[in-house]
Length: 590
Image: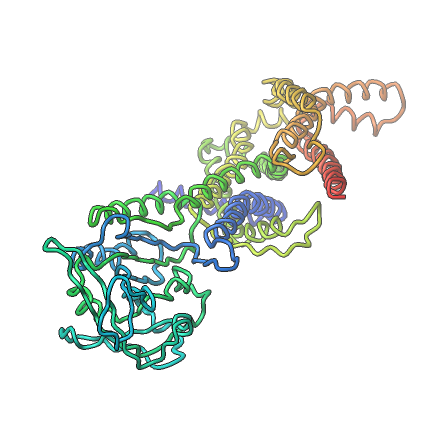
């Protein structure tokens, strides 16, 4: 019970401290919301941009005679003309699989499945011709076939849709539907009778197969651009459309090896596809493809988004890394702001922390209070970033040039596992950034705290580690590399070798400015001490006290100076770079 009361008291103290310093709490919260929103907006934007490109690639060109399939469509085919015609019964296992469980195994919401089977070509003759021979020219070479849900995607311009023919009598005509193009070319009308003729080779020799047909209707596509059409509607101009039941009861028993084309067209909904779900989708596609081939060899997956998904995942990841590289200076400024505000908050609480430590509170209890505060603020910031990150991503997408948001961004923004992982990482970083000052403060008792108040005990850790000096080395090397390159982009037309392929052009100036700022802060106390010595020779008491105070308490102005210098220098650099790029692009265009 004591342990429970101890932890609940820590939680209560954390809440009271947050409400006691509302101004600093709001400032920290604003910094956290902006930081986490910016960090989460980058994968959102990269995923949305390449998803749009993915859809355009999968839908294909919208030229004359082309067919724009839905972006996430799968087409399995067995081509009998290449691999040998099959009996209808041999197609049943793979037909059952692709018509049913395959759609669920692909891992996407299923929209519809269209099945299409047809025979080899046969010759079409008028019914009043008694004698047919190989040298007689037919009216047309046609085939028998059915397409599921065909009647709901066409308009009957004459007659009606054929009824199923269940009679096994070979003299009973089969009701068929013909295309308007074929009817116009040959001059066929609804109600006319015809005979199909085919010579089939068997083990016993050549067998003549004649199937009478009657035209019950003429069709044309209702909407040639509908997602239903897996092929261009013109492909079916010479196909005698029959119901599936007619195909099973009359065509399959009449023709040996009747299936010359078996096709399964699965339309899936890829609205929620993201870069993080691509590996599983590709694995699902491979599994379905292998199971299909096991049921009927040489059944191929002719159309699928797998290759485009591979490129989408790779390019989205590359753009994310690139944007993060460009955003390092901004995120550094945000973290510096958070550190500054947290430092002010901890500075106000140091006397309280020292009193707690002197009265028996452990360092873990003190840190625990700050940890609860940090987690509460980070949790609220993460919830707010759920709405802030899409807003930032839309701003990035609508940016036409520097501070010009004229473009209307039409981006599909979906939070995925990767976005939440990055958001969780950002929360962890901000929690650590808030805890570090408290961990340092928790080591002081009331005695050491008062001593530290009178004079800074030692330089900050980055000065003791000479981090400012070491940071000058990569900055200098980066400047050397940029000098070797010589320019942002060469003259002539725009190519891939532009600014955005070289993050060094952003990182090197930011790193150099940061290193020089830290170096300046190292020498600033000595400059203040020198200034105080000079002022001490005068009668200016106020200036003397101020300079001595600054020379002895370097921790008071380190974070504000870093934030101020970096903000001004990076904004100047970004503005000049944007102006240079705009002028460069203008010169290339004109």
